[in-house]
Amino acid sequence: MRFSLGVYTCEQTLGFLEKVLTLEREGLPSKFAVEIKSEGTLLGYCGFFHQDVDGTSEIEIGYRLHPDYWNKGLATEAATAARDHAFRDLKLPRVISLIHPENIASRRVAEKIGMALEKHTTFRGFPTNVFSLSREQWLKEHVA
Image (tube, rainbow, N blue to C red; front, side):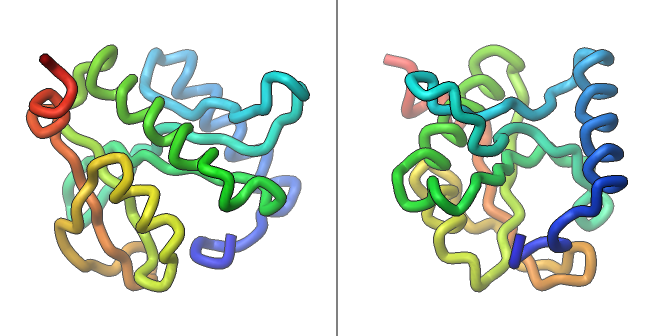
């Protein structure tokens, strides 16, 4: 949480969960639990955040994993599944990732799933790199 708004209080966590459930009930792209199936261990979440970036509504692929599971390729695996779901099933025209310039690990994940740096901006008071990928770009790589 070093590159975001910090660790949530219990009340903030409940608000976050209610927002996720509301999106789910409305049939809108939301977040998914990330787990190690063989262990039944919940290690975080990955999925879609509805963001307003510089006056434009965007769908962001984001994730939060417990630090014990960093550097194992799991964020990339989860983000890849979210990307493919976005384009294959939901037919979204594009997705983004908002990444603090110092967050090299998240930048690598975005690049591994095919995103490229689109621009620099300020988001919620923080310097932010906007990475993006269009469905058209994804189709060129994933349709034979």
